Image (cartoon, rainbow, N blue to C red; front, side, top):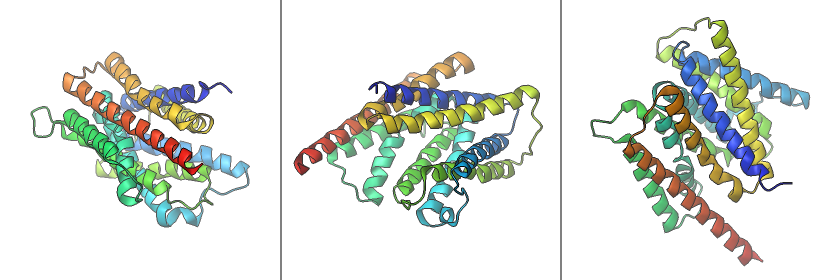
Length: 294
């Protein structure tokens, strides 16, 4: 098997997610954000229900409403609400840049909640990454946009989701977890409609096709992500997650006419650099622990 397969699948996944975000942003000009989430959630749920059904299993079981699984599903719902609104209302370059802080927040959460060891070097990287996020947000300045807190909310919710995932019952299948993740978007979409006081609209033929394409691209991106993590070494594939920022910047500039300023670009560089350093440090520590065990 080619060593490039994992990284290429990761890049393909990130490109798909960036394209999905762009289509959601385009749709949100005519279709309520909550309705978009509702459609995407129902479509993804149906796909995973069919996959699980074909294997003789069940998607909806009591385990999804207990303990870590319940926490994960609630976090997924919150993240979906924040992400859909972020993509609809905030420049894609800003959304994607802030999302790159997630590996750092997961590392911090794993240390604080799960008790995983994190040395001073990775704590330093976390602080540098957070400084980058502050450069992008610029709280207290004239350039501060409160809507930019939405992707930050998504990062926090996704961090809770990933930490809860580590505590899931081993008997719960990956397909079930994925199906629950998509289904959690459904109540999130309904809540968005209620909170924003919007009602569903009947999309035109073009928007209906775009909704279907958005759902398809999102599912394919998810599939590519799973494949990348299974066929490629973590150290080889994970750094390519940051390619999503590159795709988002290109789409934002070319399609939506965004013009990221120097603070946004500089903050993005800090976040990505800190994340890569923390990842490389973690990989090095893992190799050392394996050698010591031998």
